[in-house]
Amino acid sequence: MQNFQDFLQTWPAQRRSAGIAVATTDRILAVLEKDSLTPQDFLLLLSPLAQDCLESMARRAHDLTLRYFGRAVNIFTPFYISDVCTNQCRYCGFNARNTQPRRHLNAAEILAEAGAIAAQGFQHVLLLTGDARHLSSPEYIVSAVRDIKPLFASVGVEVYAMNEEEYRLLIDAGVDSMTMFQETYTPERYAWLHPAGPKRDYAWRLAAPERAARAGMRSLGIGALLGLEPFEQDAFATGLHAWWLQRHCPGVELSVSIPRICPHEGSFVVEHTVDDRTLAQYVMALRCFLPRAGITCSSRESAFMRDHLLALGVTRVSAGVSTAVGGRATEDLHNPGQFEISDSRSLFQMTAALAARGYQAVIKDWETPIL
Ligand code: SF4
Image (tube, rainbow, N blue to C red; front, top):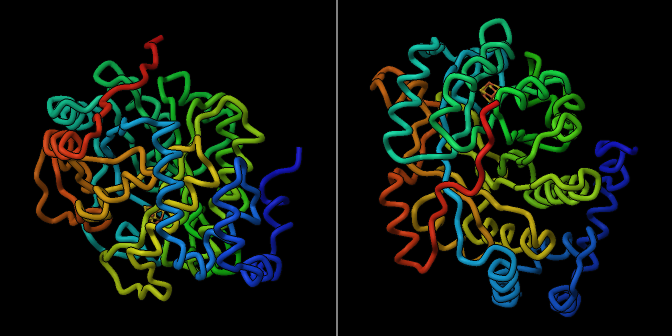
């Protein structure tokens, strides 16, 4: 089987630029009439010219979202158990070079945090660690999952890239989804952004969702961190990745996250800011290209932005978020968290806000049996 990295190379920058250069308003409107879109069609919807067609795109994206997802919106919350990290990602507050205090929860602390999250009513959690295998080993994560699984219907992970056997261990412990952000799909930029640490290995990270799928993972989440590269480059590569995974991993549920870079501890300068209008264009283009894929919008975005993106394709949101390790059970004023969040609504507030817009909050749509 051809892997995604090989496939991505069939779409070099030159081919993408040529694909965008042929955009016309008529071509873009014709794409919106099609039942099934090609990668070239997706590129047209991401082009600057498509900003003149946003109303038509919005109508098409809204119709497709209603057809495939109705008015149901899944809610989850992130659960940080360690922020010790050996990587030096230039854009991240957990960067190993930052001297902030770190926390690594032990089993009792993990259970206390899980209890605090469960008491808020959450059923779907996303477990996160930094990349530090010597502390947050696969065994540590497996043990954490086994301990918290009785409290939640669904436990996902967003951790470092693992091998197939390690993903199998996670699945056996009760994990049903994995999220892996490639950050940027441009290898040269990726190398600059990740000067040291195991995450430097672009190819190993890129193939992680494929390995997880082969191990039997039920649900995969991918995404780029918008703002690291020119918008069209990473937006296109992300959509292409999701499209490729849907074809090569049949039966796997697929979702795309749309994070924009946030302020953090450090001095990273965002060179390719993605404005609100362009983010909305991205959501609409994704929905038209990948009608059945989930689209996740985190609390990096404001309440206003998240509420308005629902009609355009977003199907999954976080709530009650703390990006600090152990941030619910204990208040650690010295730990600023991985990044600043913009939408601090609780589960209750989010559910009410969704209801006010005619949406139903789905707290639980899956239950992994405890073996
Ligand atoms: S982005 Fe992830 S891997 Fe990189 S420094 Fe932050 S926590 Fe570590």
